[in-house]
Length: 358
Image 1 (spheres, rainbow, N blue to C red):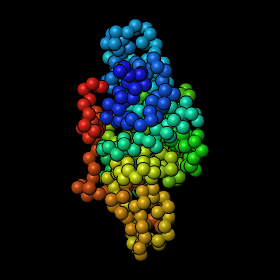
Image 2: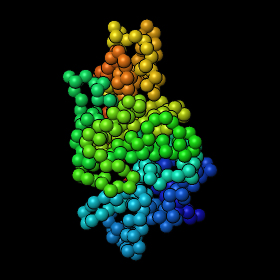
Image 3: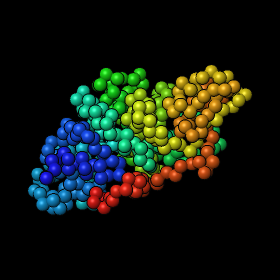
Image 4: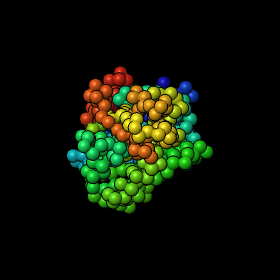
C-alpha cells in the first residue's frame, strides 16, 4: 500500500537521529498536514540532511527544475526545510522537526497549530526526549562561576555572545504555544536569543528583532532575573541560539515536569555548592531551582545527581552563600564536538542507520 505524502514525511523525519515518534491515532500526521501542502510534504520526504542545490535535487528525483526550485524556495521561507550556501549556489535539505521545523514556526503559530502540537506532544514526544545525547545542554549564568575558574568557550554565555557578529531575539514558541491553548506562564516571552557570524544577519527579519551586543547581554540578564534556565545545543561548536527555558512551558523541560523523563537536558560541568557559614536557610534558592535539587536541613543541601549546574540558585541567593564549582572529571559528561558527531551518537543510541538520509 502506497504511503500518503504525510506518512512518508513522518517516517523520513523519524529516520533522523532527532526522531519524530509516531502516535497511535496519527497526531503527527495532523501536525504535518497543518504545516505542509501534499506537494511540499512529498518533496520534503525525499530530501537529505546534506544540502543539495535545486538542480541536483530535481535531477536526482527526475523532476522539472523550475517547479522544484520554486517549491523549495517557498518551503524554506516557511521554515519547513533547511537552506544555506553550498558549492554551486543555495542548497536545500531536510530539517529535523525538533530542534528545527517547529521552532521556525514562531511567527506563524496560531491556536490550531498550538492545539495540534500539544496533541502530538502529550502522546509521543517523551520518546524523543528520553534518548541520549540530549537535544540541549545547560550553560550556567556567568556571574555564578568564580572568576579564577577555567571556563571553556562552549561553557560560557559571554563567549558565545562575544564570538558572534549579529544578534537577535524572538518570542519563545513554547510560551506562545502554551498561551494559545490557555496555559500561559508568567515568564517573559521575548527571550529566545539567536546569533550569527554574518554582520546584520537579522536586519529586516519579520520575526527576529535585531540587537547589538549590549542588547544581547540585556536579554540574557532579563532571562536570568526571571529564573530561566539557559540552554544551548548539545555540542561544542557551531552554536546559533540560546534558549531560556522553564518547566512550565519549555517543550524539553516539560518532559521532566510532566512526563518524568529524568535527564531531559545534559547538565553543565558545574554543580552548586553551599557555604554553611553564609546560608541563612531563606529558601530563595529552591524557589528558583527547576530541578528539585535543593532541600533543607540545617542549611540548604544540594542533590548532586539532580543539579544541572544552571547557577540560578547562586544568582538569586541574597546572602551569596551559593556558588558553582567544577565537577570532578569523572562526573563531567562528554560533549559532542560537532552536530555531525551528535547525530552519529544519537543514531547509534536509537539503532538507526543514517546512510539513507545523509
